[in-house]
Length: 178
Image (cartoon, rainbow, N blue to C red):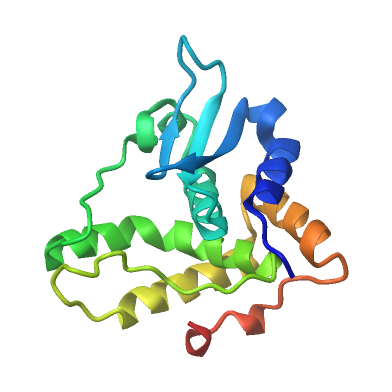
């Protein structure tokens, strides 16, 4: 199956452009969220180049961000680049659990491979197991308690486009699958 990021742009537009005045934009050197301003009347989720997974990851961050955070560049989050200390990595992982859990659900809905991202290749080595467990627990919570409205809408759109006869099976989201 071909995974074209432009399909995600169109699916996102269909789901959210009118209601949330937000569009998904590819081609960025780095991912960033930009709220509407005097030059751009729509909020923009910019993903890296044309990378499918970058688009899904940035959509997941948008889905987690509340209304006030969606008024701030990059949702007002702190970000330390690759090369983080163990303490910085722990802070990074804390804010990444929900987005990466949603990204995994998006990947599954689109029949696309997923792996967690610690995003710290040149930083202090940390044990990835606790982070992976928290991502699995968050996915299972979403599947059993309920997926919030925005990500649920996008998951439905992905399923309809990529797997029209499919669904999400909680048994597919286990630690041994990461």
